[in-house]
Amino acid sequence: MSLALDKPRSPKRPAARRGNGELYSWLFMRLSGLLLVVLVLGHLFIMNILDGGVHKINFGFVAGRWASPFWQFWDLAMLWLAQIHGGNGVRTVINDYARKDSTRFWLKMLLYVSMVLIIALGTFVIFTFDPNISN
Amino acid sequence: MTATAETTAGSRGAQPPVPDGAVTVTVKIRRFNPEFDDEPRWDSFDIPALPSDRVLNLLHHIKWYVDGTLTFRRSCAHGICGSDAMRINGVNRLACKVLLKDLLQKGDKQTTITIEPIKGLPVHKDLLVDMEPFFEAFRAVKPYLVTYGNEPTRERIQSVADRERFDDTTKCILCACCTTSCPVYWTEGSYFGPAAIVNAHRFIFDSRDEGAEERLDILNDIDGVWRCRTTFNCTDACPRGIQVTKAIQEVKRALLFKRV
Image (cartoon, rainbow over all chains, first blue to last red; front, side, top):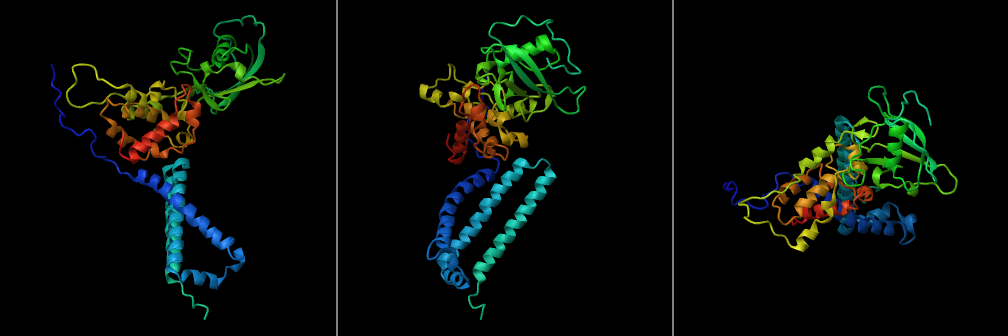
């Protein structure tokens, strides 16, 4: 008779050893997607339909909007979420379709660099926008 | 018959008499002989068949009476063993479960049936593929009962409701129809594939099993369930009618909420 006592009190579910990166990126896609529906449709509605639509947009209109922290935050959230959501989507496309490891690496590097550049540039503009620049 | 350079006689000699009610169909097969071919090629055979025939019967007819070099797997020929998975008219099916009458063109139009090896696995010859990468992914998810502590002296009791939770995924016959229908599997060989996840699901949701966390951990990896794009190709391909995509989503949910 054998006594199976090698793991008598081992927890039924030991802690995960691997990272949860893919889980979080999957979850982020769902949550950011939901937020972006509100942010982007709201943005399109304000910019293209309300008050004469696209013809009202000029320097003054943008300056007026960004005088309010609410719209600053709205545009900032939209920029970050859209960049990371879209970037993550393109990352999975690259993972799926790149055949060589070197191709995959360089495409992803190109993607990450472009994401960082656009996020940095957009954030910089939103926070340092000077409405009196035309004077 | 379409004669090709290497066409040999069938393995069983002369063709049998054509039965009453037979129609002539064109069977177009993607072939590859590693001894002669650099690239896969297409071969067509015009053969007589009854509407009640299965696609496997057409392949048998070709191998037995027309070209004995045609290579494919089949074992039980009744949809149980899962040997004869192939791409028939662009979708993964078991050749022994597809009836010719469901593929016939309406009216007097000539019927052409296209048969290819399943995609994403290396082709050995004709319709015969190397299944090893598929079984490697299957073994990686520990498809066996995992328990700790003392073994019970009697059988491990399970309620009907607990058995019901993984009933669907016990039906898998490992034919690889689902895994080789998955676009993610075609382009990225390291994805575990639907079949491995189905077989992990069968044990993860088994109340008698204690290895759920180990398997979930394996499937949480970059090559695991998060690569699934829910294209439903797998569910459509499964000859056993397993709701494959649903099983994958249940594994995702178990990972997301840390609850089996």
